[in-house]
Length: 426
Image (tube, rainbow, N blue to C red; front, side, top):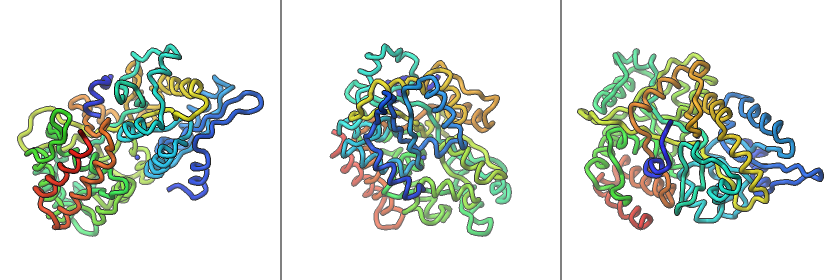
């Protein structure tokens, strides 16, 4: 199930001050007790997005099976985790085990902050053939995707009905029309939401380039930037048309992903592109919200397979931990067939172990809908594996902001982005 490593390389979410202090202090400090028990610190955002207590059950099962290893969870929202791991990677003081976004892997590996998992797999006689995918740098694996998520279109069905839109849009024209009608339906509701904060610029990946991939387009040509191409220009012109029509929620230039999800959850926007991982969060915070997921709209007349924005809960091991063998034992547990199936089911994601199958019977029906969408298209995330991918997103977001504020033309912004990217991707 899912796709193999070669395809992934081509293709491929507020924490208290006290928690933040604990996170920073904990970095890189795998502990040994006097009785020989090892404590692994695991920093990730996953626990914040799962139903309360579910991740702890999985961790407790591991420690019950391995009484000589304890796991200390360092859980925080995605944005907070990212900032702390970026700091830890630069100073080589990462926690023993880390949740990874594929966009960070190249930089972390080049910094020597995360370890070569290929060697650990060999040392442990691990059967890597069960892995649906691996993220590699220079032929070595540094991240294993544990749970994989598509980013479909989320639609507030009640707002769509109130606006007189008969069905979920499937083309760009239909989406613009629906967004206009929702925005004109009264109150402060808008049709779409676009997070473009440059501090956490993944909106470029999830909310902008997704329009390109949904129509089978690419931002690269032979691995090099191709941002002045007709498909990319059409994509940015379309996003500009949504902005010009006044259908985008205000505050885009400083909005982060969690702000986007909050606006949708509160009924302030009719449509958003978002991770399946947030279904649990939305339903917890607004149980009566009537929403569905659908494939991303494509260019009018497009009949090919639609690319679907894609991200993973990836996992890696700190290069500075004293307990690489124990850390990999924990990783292999999370990737085992039974555990991986359980984790992907409660996360509303797809397993990283290709022999594992999510339990559709006990999962949210929207999960099955998304799986059907996934099977009809292909996962697309061209930022995974690129060097300094966060910087690439950030520089693109800066140019797009100039377009949306009327300070630059689309052509000039794309030419500048092409120049910026070409200086990074050699």
